[in-house]
Image (tube, rainbow, N blue to C red; front, side, top):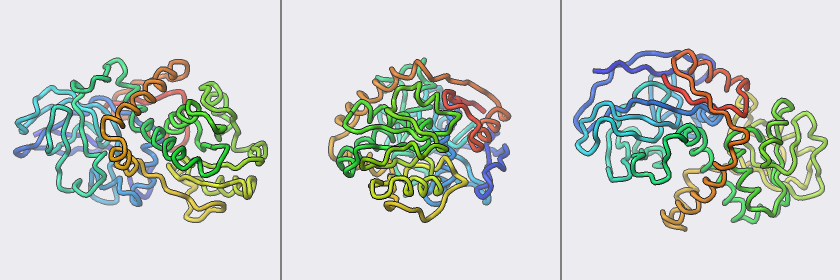
Length: 355
């Protein structure tokens, strides 16, 4: 029996967050993972903000009104009653914020396994897969922080870039990214910049504008309080990381008929969400569906090679601006969560945490 600690968040009031204890015991065929390092970013705020709508609360259920916020990170096998998994092996995957997770390994291979827990059976499979880092030729322990911070977010940006290009950018000559300092937006902006063919515009706060310019990923940076500086002379698409209805309405007023596509991805401005907005209808982008499509189109190896090339180019570009912050303990974890909720986290800093 192991005492696990977990962060419980009130699903209706995300600032109400506390740690609680649970006791875990393994059954036959199960393994206990000790979460060692995980990233906490605005993407996890999005998981919580749209958790009911998109099912993110279902991965790690708990008694209402609480939820367990999902994160990506590295864990070690602390105990195992699964014959194919050995204690001490390092694993990459999807976890709740906390100290431990019990999994039911199925489809075990040299590359990893799937958590076959009954409550996860109908959920998107990309979140149920756990990888053995020893089998990943691209894995480097010195880059664990970068991987945890960017890998799940960069793949989303990579896929959005592919989706826009396949659709010929919906006729747009300019692509705007809201929450331009967010890690998903940064990955997408790098992909768009490398692809070429469209102007890449970052929409951000005045506080973050200098940082966004410093990355070099954007052709133009416009702050939310200066939307009048946004040109309206060319068809323009929005990739909406913010989910901020007043912002979308203001962009529609500014651009008029030049606003040709609104791709909805995230919800970093989680307190300004609304069902209806002006301008083109919001087109939901859901990365797991795109992964399934491209794996069918390109094959697993084709997908992996395309992604690896883009990931390598992005990783090599982060040295000039990224600062990884390693923090441990329940207090720092909760403080990081509140800082992200309140928009107080600095964009050049990335939280790598351990309970």
